[in-house]
Image 1 (cartoon, one colour):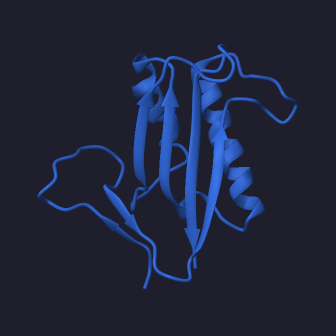
Image 2 (cartoon, helix red, strand yellow; image 1 turned 90 degrees about the horizontal axis):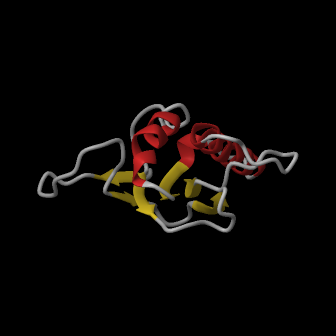
Image 3 (cartoon, one colour; image 1 turned 135 degrees about the vertical axis):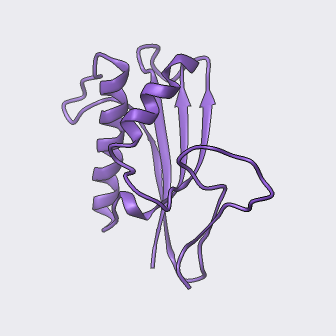
Length: 129
């Protein structure tokens, strides 16, 4: 059985995400800790868009270390420090998550992250047979 994404018509939603992801027994699950806009040199990127893109590049590198890719993501949790970042975040995300089925997703607007200059953090769960 392959990973199955659920979007029942009895639940209203809009956007590029699934309401649920069913992972069959025997599938490898891989949890990626929240990634922020800090590059490999330890430098925090200067703008929201650059921080978001760096967070997604970091996720890609962590996934690659486990033999996985963006297509293997089944769940995304996003932490933004301002609701005005929602639309720009989605534009950046769409550069990395490019086609359906889209992973299940939760987006939270929080008062702050570990460093006040950090504007976005993204964590994912990936699954691969």
